[in-house]
Length: 449
Image (cartoon, rainbow, N blue to C red; front, top):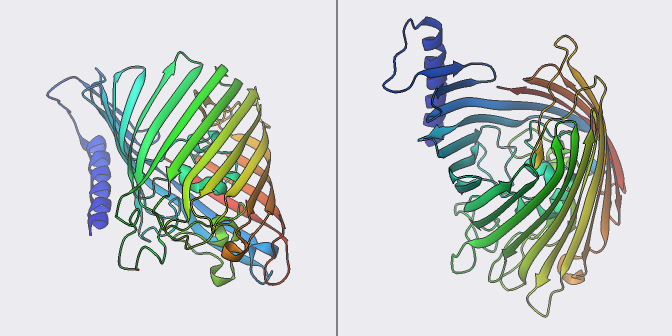
């Protein structure tokens, strides 16, 4: 019921704003004059910059077709779904306070076990009065990695690199709340540190279908911290040299949790969260862990990430390396180790450079409004897991390699169309048909407002 009221309120607010803009004769305020902008959503701000709000969003509609390892029987399957359907409201109040509320109607950018009618991707409040330091509280994704820092609107491939699947908990809020302090020293150095309290992932050991996930056996939430530091000696659009390091850690002691390490290998249509997918025939790779890791099986879960990028004019190259260790907490279990990386190269055929803001890449803005901007890219993902808990997980030394070759068309600053060919190869794992490789393509239509 709350979600229905929220959607109705948002639609009504937008309608009233558009109507007022179209028919109002004189607009008066009780304070400073206001400025109204309609390019890329609706933005209203006072001229003294003390108050503002912006209503916008993004829609990403995907269609994919795939076969081989991506399906259980190896035959061709397809999927059509909304990858993201965000309504976003953010702004500033009393100069130093900022707020952001993002609601995803598609359900597809969240993790598993989300409600199928959408969820709050972010609901946060920030205090910026200690510039250049910002303090944020609420529900939001922790920071870990260059591709995650870059908005889903402007990452190069439709799906972020598969190596992130090894450490999916580092970037997801999973129903919890957190506090993060971030800031920069000049234009070259950026850092953030956050502490989060999260729900454990649903498992048969901790929950029933009618009960929400909780933390440990006493109901204490899972605690996590994230640290990210970025150094960018070159930080201008078309002239970037970027280095970063990330560290994340969570406490799994006294917690029953879903410890599976899984990957869709760049093909979301294998198994979507709230969209049409391959159904029972979709084959999602399990590299390690167990769906029902009992209380007392593991202790500390730690992830390290390194990132680097270079851009000159329309050419850019970037990559990240991730290492994870899940430490056993009982003699019957052994540590689980995982590592992965990706390397990506991209070139804008029409000459535009990818925009860069300290710590992340941003959009490509077409210089020619008639033909737009055309970007060609290739990315290689590699991920592996070593899990020697033979009788427990029956998985050991699984590797996966994913090739992504694609073309993006930025028709204008709001519309982006893309097509990507994806090919995956797996070592020490097969589908029921005996396939250890598969391929397919993903088409996306994106509208940002």
